[in-house]
Image (cartoon, rainbow, N blue to C red):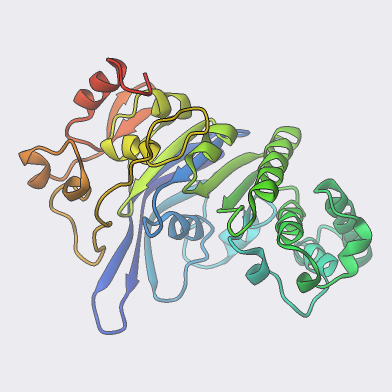
Length: 329
């Protein structure tokens, strides 16, 4: 049984002057216990919105449809009771930008202890003791928990955010760009910490990032998003060696490789507006493999192999090209 199953998730944002932005469109994915998945794509493609919808944390101007099944419960059932029961205890979120996620006037250890007390898992004294254990687990001196967030470095705040996410022993850890605004050395430390914690604690991991090398190091599978849709999904090795969607291939081509002297090729153009429903492939204007029908027909996700899905009218051609000797082959 899947730990998390998302079915046909849609998110719209109502605009102040009328109209809606369709930020997440028909998103479906499944995550088994202990499995790790990366959600990748350019900024603005809907990754963070999808995560907040999965956690049932969307703002008041959002409309959501679909199903998010976690441990047998639908988190999108109207009302807060079902989602609140599972937040922190079942699935927890490492927010992007830890400085903004912490209350600046509350000591760090008190904030880590708060979800344990709120869910009545421990009293205040026990929760503080557990918070200090968690700080030590993520590589921070437990005594530092008495400090305020602004007294922590960026890397320490991110580690403390992970400690908070682990406070109630969740089954699934959701990480939204956990290495944003950190230098390369600290990024590597945070990623190694994430990998170690997920392996040692048997956590499922769903991580949002635009960094494909990070996904290849941490995740078993990946879902590639573009213009609010998942346009390709599958095991990370398959996506790397034989991408079925041109956007996936072009994302890899736009990523520097320290072990290859190939040129880095940026993706031309910009993503489409999301306040207009697409009638053709949204990537076609930027695609180097588009044909006439790509500008006239909207591709739907289709199975193209074991555990692989792609939304491209030329998916079979792309697979044949990749397997026939592209740089990934």
